[in-house]
Image 1 (cartoon, rainbow, N blue to C red):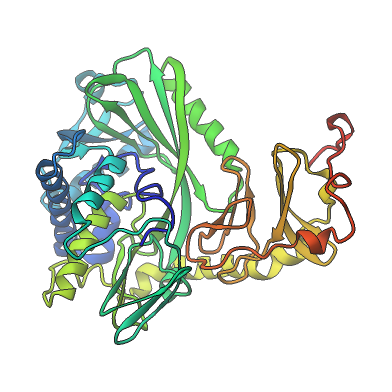
Image 2: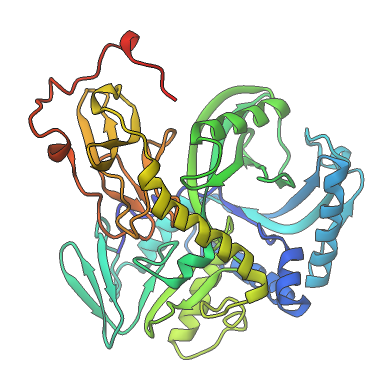
Amino acid sequence: MEHRAWSHGCAGNSTGHISLHLDSHYTKIESNFGRDKAALVYRGQMEARAEIERNCAELEIAGFEGNIDAYIYAESSQEQQAVRDEYVALSRAGADVQLMEHWRDIAGVPFDTELALKLPGSAQFDSHRYCQALARAVHGDGCAVHERTRVVGVKDGVPCEVQTEFATMRAPSVICATHTPLGVSVLQTAMIPHLSFVVAVRVAQSMPAGLFYDTHEPYHFTRRLDSANPHILIVGGADKKTGGGERTESECYADLRRYVGRHYTVQEELAHWCAQYYRSADGLPYVGTDPGSSHVWVATGFNGDGLTLGVMSSIIITTAILGGTHPLASIYSSHRFKPIASAKQVLSESMSVAKHLLLDRFTTKASSLELLQPGEGRVMKVGGNNVAAYRELDGRLHAHSAECTHLKCTIKWNDAEKTFDCPCHGSRFGVSGSVLEGPALQDLEDLLKECCPRKTPAALAPPPRDSHPAQS
């Protein structure tokens, strides 16, 4: 069951990297889990990559490009030690990795650096095309893909129940492949939601094949679209915490465009978009039954590696439901808890949630709905309510409760994507109040009549732009 159109969420918005490397880095995995388990994680990445390539071949999915090298490079002397440490950790995990002292001349790239590690065996593909092909392959023979079927509740039991807007379905097991567990889950306390930003540009230079990652925080990544389009690049990064941080979403896009402009001669921007991901406390995903459930399965905390870790999760869960045990099941277990590795992040995130849950509702600034200009959104206090308000370009006004329907944190305005995002657990809502993604199951409460009980639409029209006061 798919909330909206199939593969139009995070999977369809992926940049299509199939890397054996992980965003959390093998140095962290080795430190938290040990060398032997880090080696198992690396083998899992290879298994997931092989599964994607096999599916592309069997289903004749065009666009898969294999045998691509991934590069992690340092752009300053301070970053070089991190590259050397990652080279050692990857080597111990069994990777055929190389340390390149003069890689710029070899790779033909525009980055100011002399040190990189090279990891062969990566790939790239069109994730949207891939997901569409998988849906066509499974539909039929007792299987069905239901689009625009919104789930509003999941109940563990024998059998499990899945409530949708249309009907209740029952099954022995339910897999929530929803990026984060739906509703309330203890796993949400061990994850931080982030947004990652992407631009697709046409440049004057011809980019060589490869997946390129710097070591900044947040980092940037680059790849060419495909072998037929070496002048079209997909560049991402400038990540920020969903609904939080010092930068707005528009500022993140601006930072990313400045980064692209420093390295390339940009002829045209073709597209831009962002996607949300969840960063786990100890660097690895949580895969298995949702804590407190026996037959509801979850897979979450993929960081920026949802393509490979999502595939690996499907293999682990399928193996378990059929009575087997995958070697990675215990390492990725949704029931694991590592106090030393996780406590700092869990405590920090719990304090952040408490801030948004308690303080934000009292510190929201009072304002007037009439001040909203077309295309503008804001969270404001109107009367006694915190209101998520937006004015359409044609003047129509939306006013909803700014209280997230998941756990009542105060949502924030996303000025680039025109959404209201929850900084606590990553629920995101459209300007109409509808749930777009995240753990929330209910739409925002409509407060338009309550906020404007006696005013006509004409009376709510915004003032002329030249009389609009400066906004903070």
